[in-house]
Image (cartoon, rainbow, N blue to C red; front, side):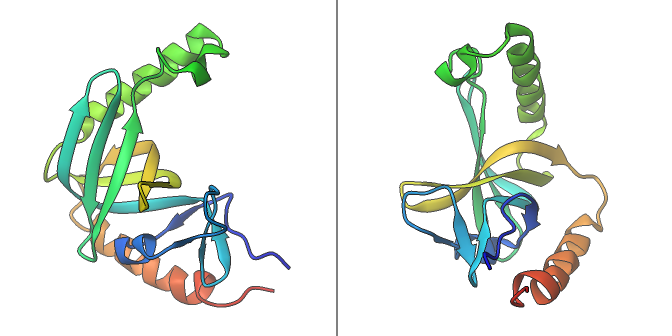
Length: 159
């Protein structure tokens, strides 16, 4: 039976995310202990930020186990992918992405949901949702969730 969690955002620590294997190479699927993954959730402090307006926001999230590179695309108006979609929908998506990009600041505790991708051989998150967190306990709770899920769901073979 195919073991897959590819339809959910899997909570992972940076150490686990950065050690994922792309399987097979040059595909959008990654694996951890034989389980297929394609989406992830990470949470940590923003330690790097590079903003190219109208193109992208590149940033890194440090959760204490490593730094996860993330990219939030902001090129909706010029992307050929969105050219086939309704202009109102594209504008809405672009507005949401720009709003989220404006929230990402250095030293902010940030939760990122997105697709696990690879760029120049490095695992990264292509963000679909970015949220700044204000609760000081959110990092510890994320760690506990990741550890619990690793033991009960991700690390154990499922039948």
